[in-house]
Structures are given as structure tokens and as C-alpha cells.
Amino acid sequence: MIASLSGTLAYKSPTEIVVDVRGVGYHVLIPLSTFEQLGAEKTDVRLLTYLHVRDDAMQLFGFATEDERTLFKLLISVTGIGPKMAQGILSGVSVVDLRDHITRGNLAALTAIPGIGRKLAERLIVELRDKIGKTSIVAPFPSTDLQTRIRSEALLALTSLGYNRAAAEKALRTAIQESNGKDVSVEVLIKTALRHAAK
Image 1 (cartoon, helix red, strand yellow):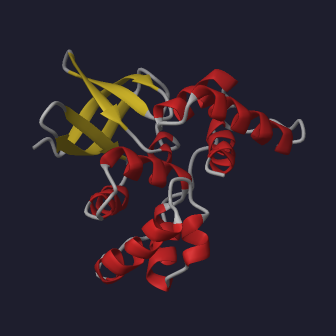
Image 2 (spheres, rainbow, N blue to C red):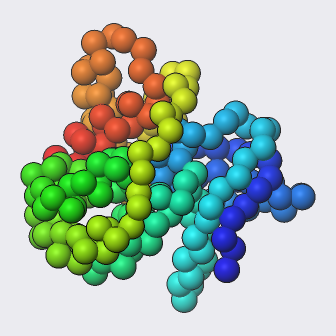
């Protein structure tokens, strides 16, 4: 089991990165919450990881904090939620907010998260409320404000999370219109687009 990676950030996008560890490049899938805390390419990076093994592939998921990894593991323990969906859920809501929504049984807030319908929201509450109550998830450090990214990077993130190109582009157009001409970070743009893509 690969529990963590330390190396050089060779490449990054909102949903995946490559970490160079002494000449070996590890492809790592990440949620948007982790992307927000990464430095620039060619800088040092350390990630906590989870290796998901299937019959036909192995996927390595990376997280900036133990709280993210803990909640990711809890999410994939729920019937009907695979690692890609868990990655998408963590990209649309903070760890702290998701924990609160589940422990409080807030169906309205859960169904507002991209990828979660009413039945899945009910399942999350039933299967995770007690488990999450036993964990000690704390508020993360404020994320670093990154410079505005080009639209193609946000589009790549949405398509990587499973949305088709047409739906992703439509959601991005709506998100851009909502910004009223103001500069927004790629994280804000993606989160806003995710809300619209899920409708």
C-alpha cells in the first residue's frame, strides 16, 4: 500500500497531478480541495494517498490532509459510491461542510452537492452519521488564492470528473456569466460550474 508521496510536482491540473519521486512519475487523482492547496509546478509536494485496486487497474488518489483521506475512505464505503464519485463529491463541498450535512441529516444541503441525489443523500446519512461522529475532522487552513486560470483548465476538470463536454461547457458559460465580469480563480469557477452541471 502506498500511504504517502513526497517529491516534485511535475504536473498539475484540478483533478490530477504527477509527482516525480526520484525519477519515477506517479499519476495521482485529486479532489479540488487538494488542488487548492498545491504550490506551483516544479516545487516540493507531499501528499497522503489511497491506492484503489480493481481487477483491471490501480488508481492512486492523493489528499492534502488526513481529514480529506478519512472522508474519502468513508464515502467509498457507502453502497453506490466509487472512488471517482467520491473525488467529485469532495470537489464540490468542503470536508467540514460535508461532515456537518451528514451528521445533521441535512438532506437539502446534501442533494445540492453535485452528484448526490435524494436516495444517495439518505444512504449517506444512514451509513455514515455514526461513523463520522467518531472522527475528529477539523477546519482546514484557508486555501491559497491562485491566479485566474484559462477556461480550458476548468473544462478539463469537469470532463475528468465525468461530465460530457457539451454539459461542461454550458455549465462554465453560466458560471462565467454569474461572475459579472470579475476575475475568479479556477477553483471558484469549477465549483460554480459543478452546481449548474448537476441540475
